[in-house]
Amino acid sequence: MRFAFPIAQLPLWAAAAAAAAVAAFLVLRFLERRHEKRLCLFVDASLADRLLPAYTLRARRPLAWLTLLGILFLLLAFAQPHWGKKWAPVTRTSRDILVLLDVSSSMTAENPPPTRLDRARQKIESLLESCPADRFGLVTFSGEAAYMCPLTLDQGYFRSILDAVNADTLSVEGSDLAAAMIEARDAFEEDAKRFGGNENNNRIVLIISDGEQTASDAVAEAKRISNNAVIYTLGIGDPQGSVVEFPTWMRKYVSLPDNELTHISKLDEETLSQIALAGNGAYVRITPDNADINFIRGEFDAIQGKTSSDTLRFRLINRYRWPLAAAWCCFAAEGLWLSILPWVRKRRLRRMEGTTHA
Image (cartoon, rainbow, N blue to C red; front, top):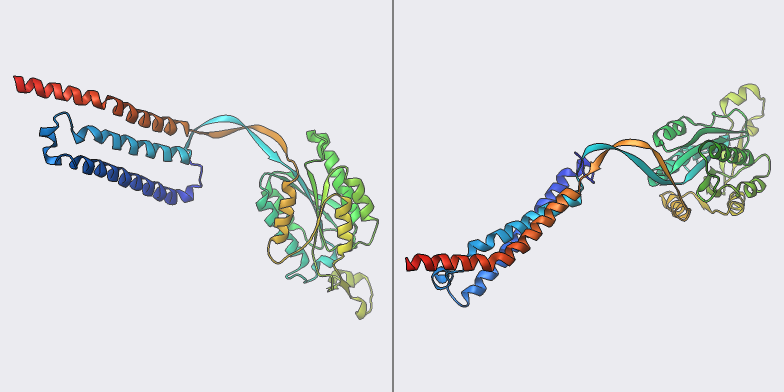
């Protein structure tokens, strides 16, 4: 059996339910005491049985117990207990989010710390947590682009691919944003052929890069891909620039003077903004907190998701209707008892009169 809340929170919910039950008991007891006090305004309670033969406090006690029992069943219905299993279709509403991650040597710059690539991973992780129902895919690019992870709902698999990515994943140096977008467009077309659906109102491309490009025209390619998806860009880095050293393995094969073994890598916000504008999306610069991801998440909310049904799955059945029906029966029994209470009193009065005559 499980409930609507995580099983780890069971003690907390049980304590809250117990507190609600105790509060209801105290309220009911207060109302009964007030009822008795009102009666005492006319006659002492100890004389009520002799002066009012048909009256008895015991006849009203089931009302309080039925009310309390109904509240307990109602609380159980709110908890939505699940037990018993059946095959049921799983329906999801999701978007397709393809992340284009820059893994060029400039992403090893330590601005922001620890490196741009590490911070990019952190931002993607935050986005994954805020979009649990969406499909994610990953394209990495430097001087070339590679489709590393196909669009999938399996975030664990996506994370394993993401963790394995580094600045040495691709062998061609440079930063070809256009090649990454061509790879993204091909990925969407391939996914549409395999699973159907050609609509672009639920497709998103998120480019995470410092914006430096050394080949092709990324803005022109963004205009082409806008027919397939909306493009958002997240700028990683500092417009003032940061020192980047060439990797050690390159120094073994390329002979360069010491003053050319490093270069300044700057965040190119203009290029990233133009790409986002051409792709009908938006640009945001990285922030120390999650304000950037919250902004992107808010933009995603405006994009309509698609409804899809997975294969049948063996799932626990939500049995909230049973305690809800029990609560309804308790409250109905309370009303019924109130309606027959005068009849009970009349019957008790006739019985007492018959005993007196005898």
